[in-house]
Length: 166
Image (cartoon, rainbow, N blue to C red; front, side, top):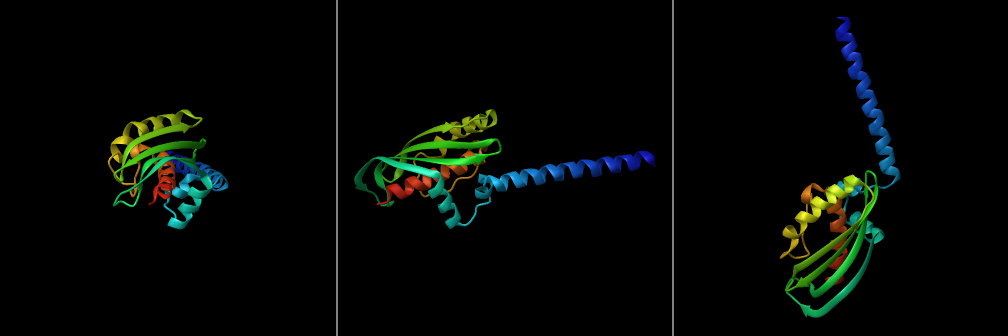
């Protein structure tokens, strides 16, 4: 009977600790306006505002060739910042469009923690096979198990889609 009561007390104590830590993490996340908010797939207008605020973009090269996809052939670049549990990361994206589809892709990243590096490596090893040959009008989910990197990629991709519009 005493052992059962001690077990219940231990479980309640552990649950209280987890809830306290979760509350602290939630407060920290809301204070830093993390990408976890974007991960909940806010409204399209909110995501557009996030892209506008977090992205810097430059169109490197573009041509006057317009395809039926509504995008001009050329090479486009954009950057997007995104929050991760240990800070913030940046993805730099360069895409070449040819005949309305992505024909080449290059990514580079700025990150500061080992965990991000693991997810980014997994993302980079998978992303080309997912997007080469596709239009800019795509929606991705967790590429290579890296959901936050995928959200950053989508933000940069949205910026490029706006640059490449015919």
